[in-house]
Amino acid sequence: MSGTAQHEESGTGERPEDEVYNALRQLNSDELVIRFSGFEPRFREGLTLQLGEANVPLTLEGIVAGATGDTDFARDGSTVTYSATLPNPDGQLAWQYDESYGDTVLRLFLDDKTEPTLADFVSAGAKADVALGDVKPKSAWQTFLDYIFVGFDHIVPKGLDHILFVVGLFLLAARVRPLLWQVTMFTLAHTITLALGAVGWVNLPGNIVEPIIAASIAYVAIENLFTDKLYPWRPALIFGFGLLHGLGFASVLGDFGLPDGQFIPALIGFNIGVEVGQIAVIAACFLAVGWFRDKPWYHRMIVTPASLAIAVIALYWVVERTGLIA
Image (cartoon, rainbow, N blue to C red):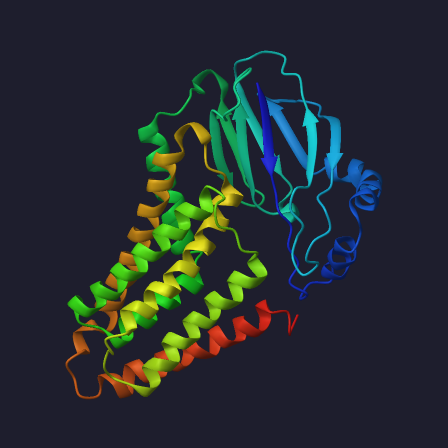
């Protein structure tokens, strides 16, 4: 049995260590490997693997650094590989990653299998416990259910940008039929690019997709400020925005990983989770202010200030994601 933990580091320019991150991103692959090799013993101190109450030693197998890319973002393709020999194939296996290292995805491979038998998200500082005797390949149904949670979690609570986009749609179309028409166009569009991005047929770098997603949120919010009715061409525009948001969803799947052997149930489950998350946001909006949608002051007192707040946040994201501010 073997295991891997995947981690991506990103700096925002707001923390003291971000200056170090930015300097490391300037290095080529060989230079980064040399720098990390000196740091590796200290890095290993933040990795804990236990079987029962006993610590299992980790042996460094190799370091691979990805090519230098856009230095505003963490580089892809960097891997540090460790191996460990378990004293027996049963018992309670525990894995913990130092909280300062961020979130990880823990994957366990049974013997010569090329697909992980277990793939679980582990939040920063949390401990992952695995009963080795109970580890079995997941069924398509279990994979489907697992990825519903991953998709939902990406919207609520982690997808603030997607939440604000859906709220922006709700504010101008608080009635069910026009709102459902827009959400349907958005869903259809992001389903297309999510699938294309997940299989690697469409791939745009995050430094292009993320600012445009923020701009789409700002556009919807700003339009809400200047009109109180839906124009016939808005669903088509929402469809175009949905294509971009789908690429954002695909990047999340790229980080978490889709099992090749159960690609379809995982992809469908993730997409359903995203939709359930969006429906939850819409339901919350209806419960909060939907009661007032027929009031003459609804647009002035609710739509305008809420849309203004969304527009300010989204425009800040546009500037931040294009690197104009740190």
